[in-house]
Amino acid sequence: MDTGDTAFMLIATALVMLMTPGLALFYGGMVRSKNVLSTILQSFVCLGVVSIIWVVYGYSLAFGPDVNGMIGNLDWAGLAGVGLEPGKYSATIPHLLFCAFQLMFAVITPALITGTFAERVKFPAFLLFTVLWSTLVYLPVCHWVWGGGWISGHGGLDFAGGTVIHINSGAAALVAALVFGKRKGWGKESFHPHNLTMTMLGAGILWFGWFGFNAGSALSANGVAVNAFFTTQVATGAALLSWLIAEWITQGKPTTLGAASGAIAGLVAITPGAGFVGATSAVLIGLVAGALCYFAVLAKSRLGYDDALDVVGVHGVGGLWGALATGLFATTAVNAAGKDGLFFGNPQLLGIQAMDAFTTIAYSVVVTFIILKFVDLVIGLRVSEEEEVQGLDLTQHSEIGYSL
Image 1 (tube, rainbow, N blue to C red):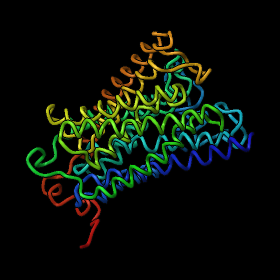
Image 2: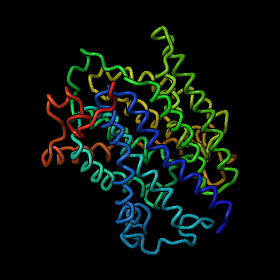
Image 3: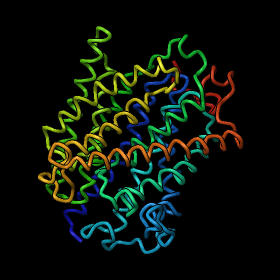
Image 4: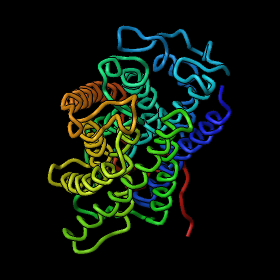
C-alpha cells in the first residue's frame, strides 16, 4: 500500500461525495421556490439509499468477479473480502477505499436523473425508482465498463464516467421526461429559476468536486491524474465561454444560468477522455460541448418534452459528445494504458466508442421505461394536479423552503 496514493484517493473520494450536495444546490436553485426543498432532498437522499445498496450487493454486482461479461457475482456481497489490503483494481490503495470512491459515483448518477422530473414526482415513487434503477441499470453498465465486463474487454475508453454516468443518466432522463409528461402550465406560465445564487454556488461546488471525479480516476497521485486535473479545468472554461457566446448571439445577452450550464456541459464532456487527451484537445472538446449542449437545450421546446432541468441536453448530449470525442482525440502520448484515437491514426477507436455509447443508450432507455411503468403501477409516479400547484415541499414533506 502506498500512503501517498491512499491520501490522494481519500481526498478525491471526499470531493466526489461533495458533488451530490453541490448538485442538490444546483438543481434546487433552478426550480420554483415551492419545490426547492423537495428537489434538494431528492439528490441528498441518494447518499443514504445508494450507500446501503452498495454495501449489501451493489459493489459486488458492479465490481465482483465477472459473469459472462455482463455483471459481477455476489462473492463480495456485504463487502465480504473487501478489506484494507490492496485489491483487484489497485495495487497501491486499500480495496475498501476503491469501493468507497466508486460508491460516490453510484450515488450521484441517479441524483442526476432527478432534474428531468423535478416538481412533479411522488417522493415514495422516487425512492423505489432509485433503488430499481441503481440495481438494474447502473450496476450492469458500471460492470461493463469498469468491472471487467464486455466494454472494457473490447477496448472501449471511459476514464471517469462519460458512458457509465452521463450517457446512462441522460438516456434515462429522456425516457422519464416522456413518461412523466409536462408540468402543469409548461409552455404557458413562467418557470424561471427562483434562486440563481444557489445554482451558481452548486455549480462551483460541482466544478471543485469534479477534480476528484476525474483526477481521482487515475487511482494514483501520478502524471495521468495531473493531466486529468488540467484537462478538466480547461475544457470546462472553454465550454462556459462557448455556451455564453452562443447564448449571446442567439438571445442578445449572456446569462448567469448560461455560465453555470456551460461549465457543467464542459465537465460532462471531458469526463470520458480526461486521462486520455491532451490540453489542446480538451479545449476543443469544451468549445464544442458548450455550444452543442446549448442548442440541445433549446431544442426541447421544439421537440415538446419537458426536461425540467436540462438533464438530457447537458448530460445526455454532452456525455455522448465526450465519448465520441475520446475516440477522436485520445492519444497514448498522454496515457500509455489508453489508445490512439482517429486523429492519432486509429479510426477504429471512434467506432468502438460509438458502439458502446449507443448500446448503453438502448439498454438504459428500455430498462428505465420498464422500471417507470412498474413504479407507476405500484405507487403512481406523479403527484396530483392540486399537489403540483401547491408545490412538493408542502405536499410531500410538510415544509417550506422560505418564510418571508
